[in-house]
Image 1 (cartoon, helix red, strand yellow):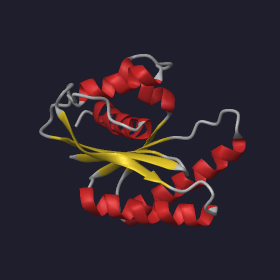
Image 2 (cartoon, rainbow, N blue to C red):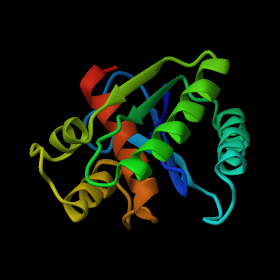
Image 3 (tube, one colour):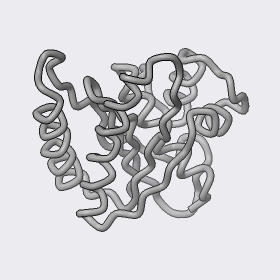
Image 4 (cartoon, rainbow, N blue to C red):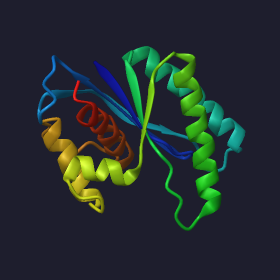
Length: 162
C-alpha cells in the first residue's frame, strides 16, 4: 500500500509518499518512497500558483502511483487571508486526487500530532524526530513541509492499521 501525504500550502505544498509491506505497520515497517515540496513564486498571481500546484500534483501521482491520500485539514489561526489561499491550494490538491480516483482521508493537525507523538500539542522538532524514527531514516526529512506531509501519511497508516 502506498500512501501520499500532503501538507497543503500555496507558497509551499509538502508531499511525502510511504509504502507499507504486509500487515505490519509498527515503527520501521513503513518505507519512504519520495518526499519534497511544490514551491510557487510569491509574487506570481494566485491563479498561476494554483495551476502550478495542479500540474505538479498530477506529476507526483503519476510518478509515485499512491493507493490513498492523507491530507492535513486546515487550521485557521490569526491570518484569515493566508488561510483562504491555503484552502484554495488544498482544494486543487483534492481535485487532482479525485481525478485520479484516489480515496482521500483528512486529519487535523492535532490528530497527526497525537498519533505521531502521543501528545496533541507536540512541537515541530518532536514531530520531525518521530517521522525520522518511524521511517528509520538517518536524518530528518527537509524541508519541514515535506516532513509534515510524511507525518500525514504515517498517521493514516497508523490510524487504519493496514
